[in-house]
Every structure is written in C-alpha cells, then in structure tokens.
Amino acid sequence: MTEPTAASPAATPPAPADPPPPAGTAGPGSPVAPAERPRTLPLPRPSGVAALITVLALIGVGVWSIIDLRINVATLVSSVDNAADFLSRTLPLDFPGFGELAGPLATTLAIVIAATLLSVALSIPLAIWAAGNTTPGRPARLISRSLIVVARAIPDVVLAILFFRLFGFGAVTGVLAMGLHSVGMVGKLYADAIEQIDEGPRQALRAAGAGRLQELTGGVLPQVLPAFVATAMHRLDINLRISVILGFVGVAGIGQDLAHALGRLDYQRGMALALIVLLLCVGIELLSVAVRRALLPHTEQRVSGLSGLVARMRARASTASSAGSGDGSGAKAAAARRTSVDPRAASAAALATGRISPPWTAERIRRTFYVLVTLAVLGGSVGYAVLDFNGFIDSNRGPLGVLAMFWPPETGGIGERLVAGLIVTVQIAFAATLLGMVLALPVGVLAARNVAPHHRVGQLCRMFIVFVRSIPELILAIIFVVMIGLGPVAGTLALAIGVVGLLGKLVADSVEEVDPGPERALQATGASRVQVFFGATLPQALPSFVGHSMYQLDVNIRSATILGIVGAGGIGYELLNAARVLEFGVVTLITLMVFGVVMVVELIAVWLRGVVGGRKD
Image 1: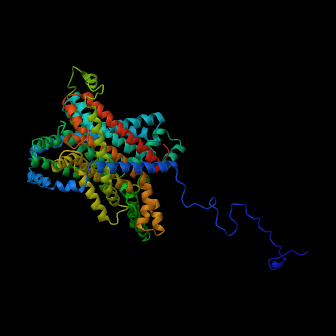
Image 2: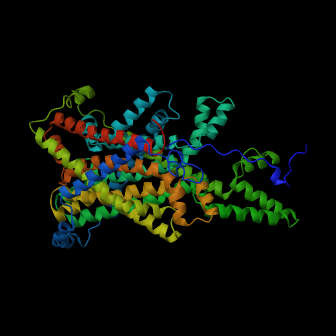
Image 3: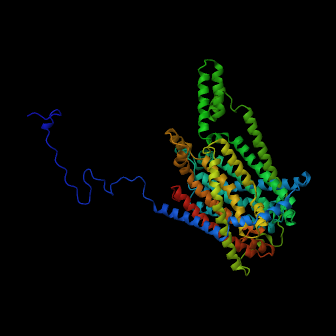
C-alpha cells in the first residue's frame, strides 16, 4: 500500500470538519470576539484616572480663582492712566554714585553667596537620605523629606523675623534666613536628581564589592553633579532676588536701600536700584553658564542632542583620515584629540609616557583659575558673614527665651481675617500658576536646545526667560499696586510673570536632560520633529513637568504671603502687622496655616509624580 504524496492530492484523506463554535463565540471568518480582540491601548489604571481627575480639579481651582479675583482685560485697560502717571514719576532714573553703591552691593553679594553655600552643604546629605534609591531606610527618608518640606514651607521673611530677635540686623540674619529656607528647594531638586540616575554604575560597583560610600561617590555623585551645580547657581540667582525682599524687613544691602527709596516715594531712585538688581541677576545667570561650561564641559556635550553626535562623528572621521595619512603627525594629533575629550584616554596616555599628573594645558589652567576664584569668593563671603556676627541681641532672654516668644500660636482676635486672608493667598497662587504656565511651558520647551527648531529661537527664548526671571516679584508687585491699586490682582499678575521665569527655566532644563537615545531612534525611522517630541521627549520629561508645576504652586503660595507685605493682598499683610506690634504668636499661627497648605500641595505633588513617572512610592 503506497503512501499518499503531495503530487496526488486526491489520495489525501479529507480533514475532519471543525466542530461548531460554542454559543456566544465567533466562528471561522467572523470577527474576533470582544474578549479576544487585541488591544492597542492598555486599560487605564485607577491611579492614572485619579491623577487625571486631580489635575483637572487643580486646573478648575485655578480657573475659579481667576474669575473670583476678577482678573480680566478690563482691569488692565482701566489702569492705563495710572501706568502713564507712574512712568512720568519714574523717569529720568536717579542712579547712585559708585561709592554710594559699592558698599550695599558687596554686602548683598556676600550674604547671598554665603546663604547659597549653606543651603548646598545642608541639602546634599538630606537629599541622599530623602531619595528613594539612596536612603538608608524608610524612617530616614520620611524625616529628611519632612525637614525639606518644613524648610520650604516657612517663609524666609518669618525666619528673618526670628533671627532678627536672636542676632540683630547683621549679615548672619540674612545668611541663616535665606540659607535655611533655600534647603527646601535645593534639597528637593537634589533628591529628585538622585532618584532619576541610571542605576547601572551603582549596580556595577555593588557587584564589584564596593561599600555604600563608594557607591555614592563613584556611581551617584558623578551623574548628579551637573544637576547639583546648575541648581546651586539657580538658587544663587533666586537668593539675590530674595535679598531684595528681605531688605523690606531690615536685612542690609541693596534691598534695604530700595525699600527706603520706595518708602519715601522716590520712584526715580527706587526704579534705578531695581534696574541695577535686574542687571546683577542677568550677570549671575551668565556667570552660572560660564561656570557650568568651565567645570563641567562634558555635560554641555551630553545635552547637545544630535549636534553633539554629529560633532563626535566628525572628530572620528578626522581621526581616521589623519591615521590613514601614514605619517606620525596624524597619529599624534588623533591621540591629542582623544585625550582632550576622554579622561580615560588621557590617563592611559599618561601611564604610557610615565607621567603621573596630566599636563598643564591651557584648558586645565583656565579651569584651575575658575576653581580658585570660586573658592576665594566663597571664602570671602563666609568670612564676611562670620565677622559681622554680633551674637545674641537679647542676652537676657537667650535663644530659648526668644523662641518662647513665638509659642503658643494665637489668633490675636483676628481669626476670621486670617482665614479669609489665607483663602485669598491660595487663590493668588493658583491663578498666578495657571496664567504663568500658559506661557512658561511653550517658551521653556522652545528654549531647550534639543527641541528648538533653530538655535536662534532657543537663544531668544532663553534670553526672554533670563530677563523675566531677573525682575524680582516684589518690584513687579509694587509696580502693579501703583498701577492697579491695592489688592490680589496686583499680586497675581506679579507672580504670573515670575512663573514664566522660574518654570520656563526648569522646563527647559528638564527637556535638555532627557535621554537622547529614544529621540535618535525615532529620528532614524524618519519621524518628524513634532513626532519625536511627542513620542520620545515629552514622555521622558512629563514627570519633571508635573513636579516642577506643583513645586511652582507651593512656591507661589509662599511668595503670595510675602507680597502681601507691599499691599498685594492675602495673609502677608496680617503677617507684617503682627510682626510690627510684636504679636509673635500670630506670626507662628500664620506660619502654621501656610505650612498646612504647602504640606497638602507637597503630598499631592509626590503622589502625582509617582503616578506619572510609573513609580510606586
């Protein structure tokens, strides 16, 4: 009996018929049943739905605040005449002489630099303990996070009032007030940077038997050093503007001179000093860029996107052509280029030549000079603050006695006014954040070098952000109060402009720091710039966007409290009055009220960031 072959299909026995499909299922050729149909999108997670509802609710609160505070075009149009009158009383500007300006300017810079250094020194260990991937344990993380939140929640003006009672009007008061308050921002951003590192180097060191300290110094700090330097320089700029605000409560420096000029309605001198502060902030921004490029040259190359990749490809092609020329000069040039870019190649070359230390090239001399100048400035600023230390101003009470003046909290008979003022302060913060985000997000994205359609567009957006951020919100609030009148509208508009500067910079930095790998992968498939942005850049930067926006909200809550000092509405007016009449229990109560609101915002921010980033805290 012969076996059937493929050539004789008739010999092939018929296949058995398929059994009929069960009831409720699809048969052959019919559409796939709903339960078996492949999904193109995953089912939404409950946490994702809750996060979306929360974000929409926050936006709704912002819209309600804008409507309730009556912030509209009609309000701005009606203030045109007041603006013209203010401008006529401001021009021409009355600039002080160099001798009159040098002392307050040097005092301001010394206080600001010393305060920033103090915040960095305190924030590094707190950030290591607060980050989820480097904390020694959950209790340490909880305590560190709590300290960071407390530092951020207490307004620097309140800290200044406290330290005035302890140390008087010396530089130490300004250094401690700004330095401790800065830990709230610096510590948070440092912790976020640590949590976003690549865990590969740490795991490699751990596999090699490295200890915990070696993991931190070899696997964590090298990755976060660019973010640490950038945050410190950014905080230096913020502290410069905060020093202007503290000048209104007695801290020496150019802010105090500005407060005195505006107090006597000398707008010509006041606006001239404000312009000097603006130029100083611009100079600090340019200095921060120069320091970052000098101390961290490889960081600039890393975040330069495709341009950096093209530059490296050209360098390799040049190296290959030089090597193929056959003479020794090409090989030497190639080796020089490799050692100038790769530190490991430089170390290998040094071992080959028997030289232990790298040669003193022009680049090394320049970087060493910058380091020495930086150390000298830091040492001089700290020395100035220490020399200006006057000791306890109230020796009879002592530090514990002064602290006892602020406890227990009390309403001072104005409890209802405090609650109403707090509600207005929260409204100002929400309205300003929403208004500022409308411009800050697109400007910040276009300012990023890896997204800007043209390098000139990115430069213009960066210059715009620098200019806006250089104007202290207090100066803007004073201008709007004169133009529009006392009330929350002036404070909201001032903070909204400030949001463009701070949030725009944070957004630009976040976009530049994304991993360029996914962007290049999409570009290799022929994707357009828009597709690359929404497919690779935005998903990576979205957790940072959410975190920065929520951070901006709680910054605005504190800033709205401070702007109330100059009549911009909110609870700040009650804070200033309580400090003037020495009702320190009311000051403590206001601080606790603001702290409670900031704490709620912080908890929402941590949860939202974890949901958006796919992380479970």
